[in-house]
Length: 81
Length: 144
Image 1 (cartoon, rainbow over the protein chains, first blue to last red):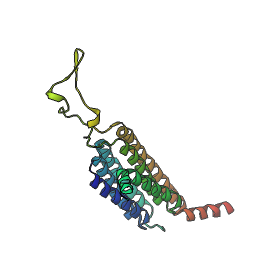
Image 2: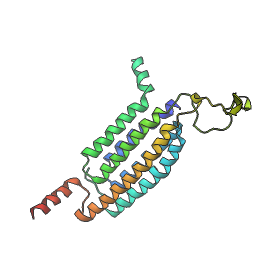
Image 3: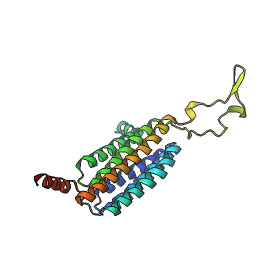
Image 4: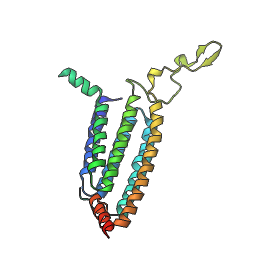
């Protein structure tokens, strides 16, 4: 475990979470959530949990981003908050 | 101050886990849009997984995959009359929280998919994803 890398990725994680919740475009929100998932995937590979990193990259970042974008295109892209 | 900084850095994963969990909980409660609530739920779940993976981390430990170099002298560790490979548990990270969290990731994605399907149905009925507009239309329907 590399402490400096760990701290940088964790700070980026909080920034990505806040941006995903504060942006008003739902498509942008789901894309930033994909960035968040890939960041946490990097964090797990760095913490020694490679199996969790594989699963997060395939299922968390891939599938959940795709189904969220599909829902945004099926419904509406605008959000009030 | 130095002691405080040491304390902050040594437990940094846990501090960020608490912050992310509270960001997710706030979004689930306070956000008006249904998709934003689900984004908050995703963040909440990954924060809990971050906590569990952080438990298994050890200092100067490798990933829990055996390459064959763990056995000293390139041979086997003799116990009684049969041979058994010798691995020091301190040199690998604890894989049990990782395996538990694999299930949690898959469950999280399936709940997200279910919730998004319900959100699509709600949008089909009420033509909106905002919570206050849906509630207003529900009130209107009850008055008729």
